[in-house]
Image 1 (cartoon, one colour):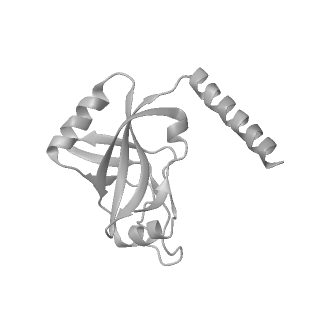
Image 2 (tube, rainbow, N blue to C red):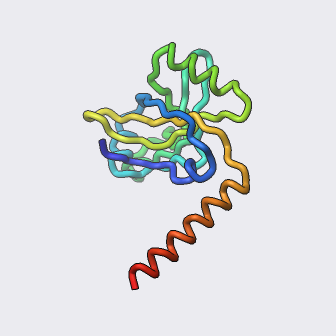
Length: 147
């Protein structure tokens, strides 16, 4: 499994409670662009509408800038391939107070492109401060050990 795109801010801003795997419906040029890692998951989220799940606000840049159609939208909604049972489960989780559906990473699995969805709860400001303090302490320890 090769990770193509990772949402780096997700683990900093959210407590990940659970992870799910979903397939993505993509156009041909989007697959090529993803394999070249021309995408970003920052600010994206998963929503459920009319019995289907969608990845919203994910930016996949065009594969070839000059040969791209004028109708190509890099931030279009992309349908996720999930069973009805999984969609209903995620819909129930998303209705709970404080729970969000966040894309964590896009990766390949046996030549298929998959999306890892995290059922997440937002962190408070003091939780984020603790993480930053811990990182700073670890950095200082590594510096001292290196000398």
